[in-house]
Length: 545
Image (cartoon, rainbow, N blue to C red; front, top):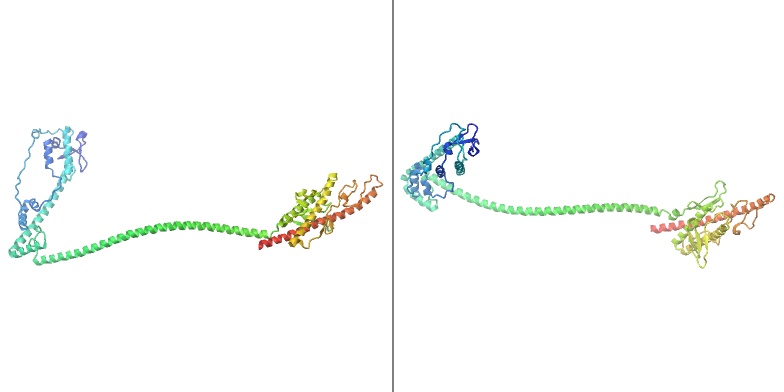
């Protein structure tokens, strides 16, 4: 046994133990401290074996019964034709102790709990091995303190008392069965033999109890047998039902697996369908956006087409009209304009504006001829803005400037003469364009103003003269196109009156010629405007068809 430590322990670590139940430190009993090898072997040999018990025949089981049940077991064995061998085992056993255990001195108790002698190393190993063996071969972990040992002993005593009461109950039952068997043996010995034969024919276990070994009458036994047969038949039916249900369960499991496979297939198809549907939805959305964009572009294009169809391109490029030459005078004289530039109206209009207007007129005539496919005979128009010119085609090689100025230098006077030839060439080109339209059946070629040589609407296109010359200079006519006489300036005061009279007559003639030239220029613009309007209408009609 081991004793619990009451106070703090002062022994070394090799000597310390802990209770496996309450986990308190322990002080080993002197009998354990001085354990010898022979005592260790004696204790281990007395422990129960942990090896598995082999199958014991019924005769051996009967031999292991307690002595109080031996007589009843003998009767039962005779009833079931079993023989029990006699027990020839030795009634007592003995153990040889070694001399070391006999010569072991008795340890003297220590003067106090703290003056205990430490265990030798070999004793420590034996005690540890003993505790390990006890823990492995029994259901209790060792070591244990005194209090835990006492509690455990009390529990085992209660368990032993319960097992004793249970054993006594079985013995009483066995005695009652024996007494019932003896009572029925005397009254029905013959029925007993028949019962044995019947039991053997039925294949019952000969080792079981007979019908006379239990309490009850023959009717009760028959009722129990009948109930047994009913239960067996019911068991058979239930077994068949169970087999049927198991087959149905297998079929259901197979069906469940098939359904799972179908479900997986359906989920896969659903996923593919959703992906395909998503792709188609995205593509449809893209197509709808594209369609909306195309419809918007179509509407814009139709709007632009309607605007272009309603727009006169030639009028936008060449805006031809007329304005009053001098609104303050009230004479009613008008001058033709192209893009806001006045063509004619000398000397009110400066040469820079007239030159620019002639450049636009030459450009308009050249573009219209190129559009309708008319090629001028003998001339080539070179539009260069305010410095445009007309070139004669071979064999002629003349170049005529379509611009003039008020400069009185000899070179400028010659240039102004070429300016007259350039205007006559423009008028000839306009005549060729009208003849070309008549041959092609153009609508703008009918009812046009008559053009003959240098005249249009009986107004000459030639430059009449420069009426804006200073009065101190002699009045003169350029190239004889204005007046037929030439006057010279007189520096004397006596001839001033005559000079003034002569200059006034020349100026009146120049004004008349200027008006004719302005009207001729306006007539050229009127013909061009009619051509532009009719050609634009024809183009819109062709687009509408």
